[in-house]
Length: 219
Image 1 (cartoon, helix red, strand yellow):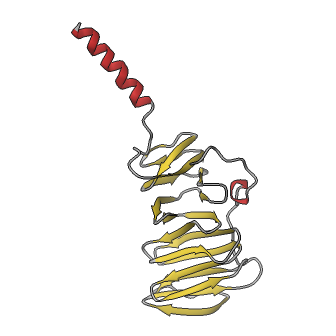
Image 2 (spheres, helix red, strand yellow):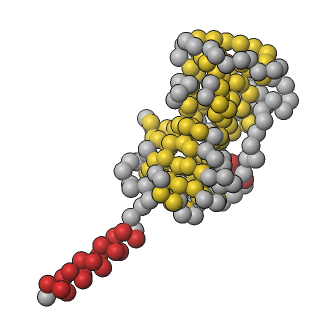
Image 3 (cartoon, one colour):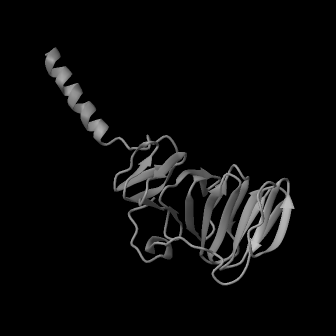
């Protein structure tokens, strides 16, 4: 009888482990991630699709990408060789970039941040916006408005980035990039606005961000 119970317990445990989510289901459900190539969530291999919970870390290797479907208008894209954390903050989804490049499609409920620069990037005004955030090196980052205007906020200041423009942000040690047209500075963070057609050097934005791909089931 004891052997039977032990076997039954082992079977139950195996079934439970098969259904256990990669993220550990420790936070609020954010959306569904779809990976292409080798990626990880919380340092565990990310399967083709996986639920994403607030606080989860997502990392992509070379030639791998991850798209997180948040809803009908809200999506995240994590480029190759990138690392970011997805969080739910006061009803909004925030992607915190730690390395590489991310992009987001938003109608107002999704934002991006680089905590080491203390900046927040979000859609400005009505309509759907596509933005891109890159970490260029330890002292510089770049924000690009690929569709619609973006608002870049740092402590004590806010800059609106028009479509097709990009901004390079850096510490006081960073040098102004060639072609920069304006400079604002507050609390050791500088923002250089680069204007002109083609200033936003975009990654290859997938159909998922442009709205041309059918998304998995999302909450």
